[in-house]
Length: 153
Image (cartoon, rainbow, N blue to C red; front, side):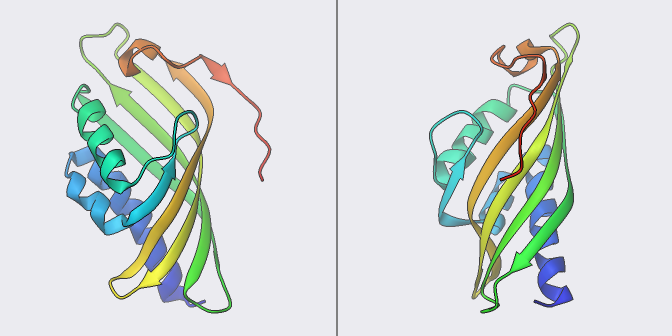
């Protein structure tokens, strides 16, 4: 593992957040492999195309978002071609036609990565939501207020 590997993986996490917040969803293609397995806290796993389509539909309903990714812990395998990363997220969502207009959530993501010809790419991601606050209606009303203690696995 090199510092360059760490920086490249951290950059992927930032490119992902920027893609969501700017609605420049082609940025998702720079982050995940075509066959990546993406698993939200609740829901069926999906591939990159399905995830990108879901983001296009759901994010279009919002007036603004801000996704922050922090505290990445990266473990590159001895081969230097695969890695695992856990990072924490906080996501803020705003919809001006809701009162109050904000919904916030936080948790962590577990990523599996491969070093490919085009650089590091995420091949699998699993989101673990830990807490939610604000108006659930901003996100369609499906979230429950409060926190759930989650053990790191």
